[in-house]
Image 1 (cartoon, helix red, strand yellow):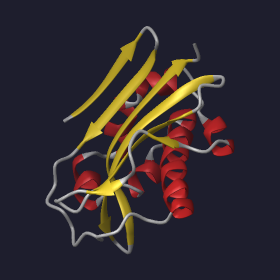
Image 2 (cartoon, rainbow, N blue to C red):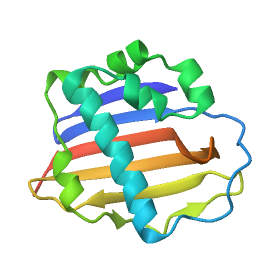
Image 3 (cartoon, rainbow, N blue to C red):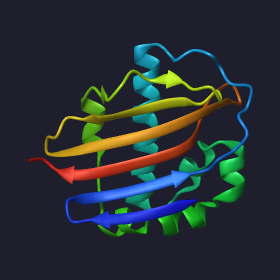
Length: 149
């Protein structure tokens, strides 16, 4: 299931694919690699949204996700982010705050939920990853950008 939703307070994008878990790792990455995984995923999406070229973002997705969502389909999904020129690169200078400690669930998915401080806007994220191809691969992303209060 894939959807893009616009709200008056910001933008929300949800990508979801229920796939059989790949031989999952059992441990949450240490703090710095985890932060790099979160920021890298967000910045790859951000670059795709700003350029309109989703091939690199597509390559970071899990294998089943790549098969289901072509770069063109991703472009259509994130159309509003691209058209509104939403740029969240400020998060690279910030430290994420996790809503709960990231964890590996019973299906082997790495579950990460949190946000970046609301200056100049709050960037909230929900991401799920599966282990594959020697690294964690994105299987679900939900990003919301809303103005600071």
